[in-house]
Length: 140
Image 1: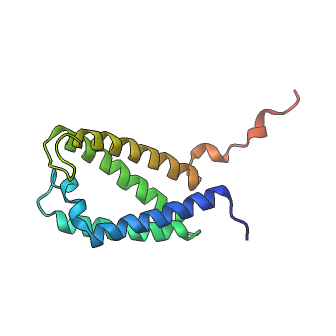
Image 2: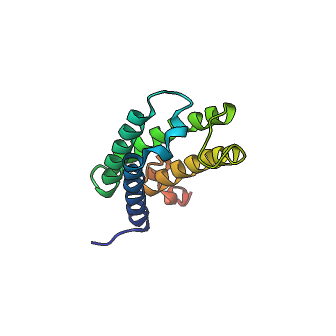
């Protein structure tokens, strides 16, 4: 069985999301400051999110369900972009201190948008994919 470049990228994303999900469950105090802006019960949210990330990461590794897993991850990242903006407008003490928190917020927004774009490319979710490029090569 040959794997394409998109399959390799999808596998890398799957392993990455499994790792990040495991980090959410094993070391939740790293991610507490992110959810402190919207909720007081951050531990439960972080554990549920870690479980969802692991399930979606495993889903990216399985060819039958990789598109559904990618769509769920894209929805999660679209939800986290406004959360990062809320963190930029409120004072939420982060792990690196007050001076680095705006930089981390902007990097988080940029990273989420790039991850969404790469997931669309890797899992072939683009609506333009089905159009054939040789459509206009007809002799008139």
